Length: 414
Image 1 (cartoon, rainbow, N blue to C red):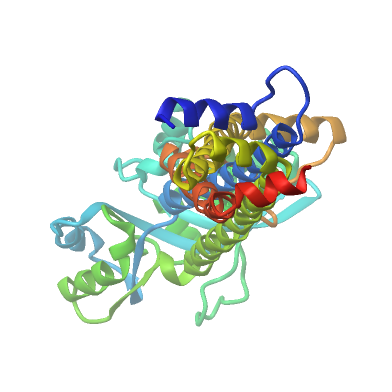
Image 2 (cartoon, rainbow, N blue to C red):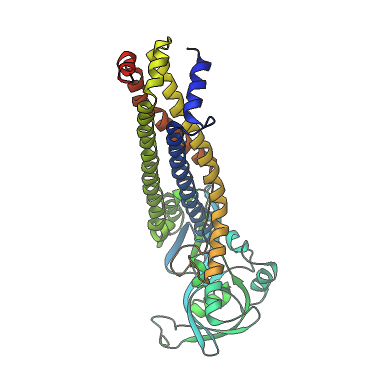
């Protein structure tokens, strides 16, 4: 048999050819299983890739990669800045002041993590600037009593931009007035909505105001450092402390968010293995389907053998059938998976609107939306693995068909 004749017979066994056949029904059933398995795997991988991307670019973009503290508030922080900025792997250095605070508006009260940043000196982190509009940035830089609240805190207090709010900070620890709280009236300059857990707790104020509330006027708590390679944060932290005087120590994002990032990676790997096993089951379905086709078509196989087809020709027919089942399943499954990945965020938003509930909220989850990042290399990899599985699965039925004895089969049909 020529290659074209083998292909024509394989096409006849795989696709409908005018009337229903058991072989075409089994082939279509195998294709459907592959389409569902491949499409589901691509959708889930896209969602997991989305969480990984948001973790790296959004959450870890807002969280300092390295934070440098001193044993006491830092007086000469302006002199230390050049030492840190000279490091070749440091992208940005921001002095800051941290303090615990209560935010009050009338009878409403909520807790917040106060952070003072040098907006007037142009040292506001680039990641934060991306989430604040121009009026909020201008007021934070120019008005000494301005405040930017996370969206979650603002919602719980029921405040809007322009409202007057009272910040309450505890007294300075270890001082004679340690029990005296500090009250500071401020005006809400903007609302920070990043879609991350930061929205639930942050209160941004100008650096001088934060230093006064923290009881360290003229000093800072430490430095927030953004690096070019966030996965080198541990090493860079050690190198930066070596550049500074004695008494400094470093923390990094791996200490605070490392477990979350590792959990996302582990979940992605486990889900990938689970769904690859589903593809393996679909490939096993190809084995069972082709074995049934061999039994159904053994009379035709015997006739082909008597007409001069070799066992190799028969084996190639069923290998081609397995390859065509895999190719159609891969193409259709990849298209379904890609379309489903792009449609999932809109579908989730529609369901949230219909049901009146939030599936993801930063009170519990790191982001408040379902992220999706469709990577075509994943589509190609999943498709290639599925196609190879289908071809390998067709080897056993092909060998079984090639070993059929035509005389014995024809004698049974008499």
